[in-house]
Structure formats: C-alpha cells, structure tokens
Image 1 (tube, rainbow, N blue to C red):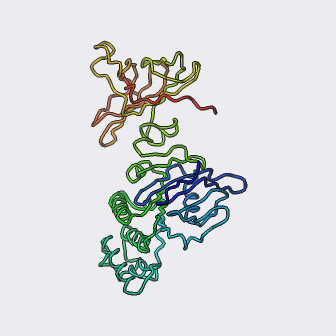
Image 2 (image 1 turned 30 degrees about the horizontal axis):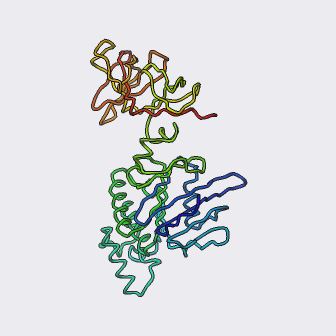
Image 3 (image 1 turned 90 degrees about the vertical axis):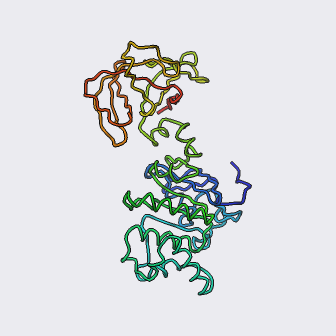
Length: 364
C-alpha cells in the first residue's frame, strides 16, 4: 500500500518492529486526520503500545515510516527525537511533577513569552475546570483532578497528535465516563489527531471515529465501530466485542443446514466447514410456539428446542443458557428485564438470519 497523498494529520505506513527475531508489530498502517480519534484495540501483548511508542519516537521501527502533516518524522533514513515531533502523550500513570504546582505542571513545555505561557495555561485550566487549583500541589488533588491536570499539560503545547495509552483505566467507573467524554471534547476542539490504545471494546466503541483491531502485531480489521461490530472479519473479531454463539455446519450448494433451518453461504465452495455466529441478544425465545404454534417467518428460521441450564439477572437484562437438543451444545440468549426460568425448563429458540455471520472456518 502506498503512502497516502493527503498531508493532513498522522500517516503511518507499514510499521514493523521485532525483538530477537520475534515480530511485535507487523505492517501496521494508519491515517488519522486532524480532530479524528482512532483506537488501537486488541488483547494485551498484541502490539498496540509498541505501535504507540514508535509513533512517539521512543522506539525506532525496523521498517515503515511515520509522517505528520506531510513531514516525515521517521523512516529508514530519518528519526526525529520525541521532543521534536509535536506529539503529546497521556498514559495511565499521570506522571505529574510532584515538586511543581498545577499551573507549573501545565505550563511545562509551553513555548512563548511569560505572558503568553500564562495566558495559555489560564485558558487550558479554565477549560478543564481547574482554575481554582492553579497553586495546588499534585498530592493535594483527587485521582480525577490529577487526570485532568495530565490532560491539560499534554494539550497546552498544542500538539498536532495526542497518543493515549489506556489513560482512564486507573479511574473508577463513576469518574471514567465523564472525564473520558470531557477529554475527547477538548481534543476535538483543538483539532488534535488522537490515537487511543485500549483493550476494552466498550471504550473503543464509545470514543473512536475509527477502530483498528489488532491481533499478533497486525491490524486484522479497520473501520468505523458500527462496521466492525456488524461485519466482523472472523470469529475472533466478533467475539472480541461481545459473547457469541457458534453453530458449525458444512456448505452444500451454497446452503448450510442446521437445526434452525438453512442459511445462505454464497460463494463458499461445497464441502467447506463454516461457523454461523449469532450474538445472544439476537436469539429469540419463542414463548407462543412451544413447537406447535404458527409457522415462523423465513427471517426467523426454524425453532429449535433447548433446556435451561442456568439463568442470571445482569441488571438491565437476563442471560439464559440452554443446552440444545440437536447436538448438546450451549446457546446463550439475553432477554430484557427479569427472566429467570428454572434449570430443566424446555423452551424453543429462534435466531434471526439477518443477524447471523456465516464465516468459513480458518485452518488451524
């Protein structure tokens, strides 16, 4: 893939990095425009943070290049130091200077005259609602206030790119959502391109304009959160965003036969084993039918009988697990509100064909 001809924002192309012949990052490419939030999402050890360090200049890639607003920061010949890249960093560890007060922390690294620095610091502290704490020391602040100081210090020098490595994971749930939304509002107002690293799908879905799903050092799927959730590239991608049910079947004449009826598998060769993936919220319990009611619509497929093995109330919904008669597999269904049938209860399940993903089984 050639380097983007667009000069706005951050472009990384073909980043690769290995340690003792073990590839940590392999062929990673991104384009993050000004004011856009791109999330590197994936399990621990998949190369997210290493990619961030390469962009920051803390690590030097073995191959590929990093370009910001048309200016090459790093390639096979050039490697600008982190302090020369106009890139901000926010980490889980706030790393505030303990001997400097809030205003001094925020003003650290801001260029200009004393009056210009004071004006910039005052504006940023007002924006993060910390003006009254300008003279306070870091140890006098709460965790949420320290996080806002770290944010203010990072954006005060007007970086073109902000790199964020799981910055909210140390905050409790009560604070996290508010500070997270506030942070994004400020960065978008500043026109900053943001690369966020997280292993939490919900955080990525909430914050990102685009998600790059990483696995084993590679980006396996990239796009808008809606697209990744509703059109996963494989079983692992689907499972990363939520619980899934999996039905194994074999393709015959572009169709697969299951206890829930036939599913289309266009373009898949005969004899190919596929996985039909359905999320628990798209499994419907057919209370009226009981195996004897009116015929289901083609979209609903054929009802299949299962026996309840466990039911749990999850707050806004109930999760019910069934052992299916047809093959003994476990299928999960989520039901709004409180629904806690006793173990051993037999019920009929239906799945919406339009909500299923039919994916060929990958070798190995």
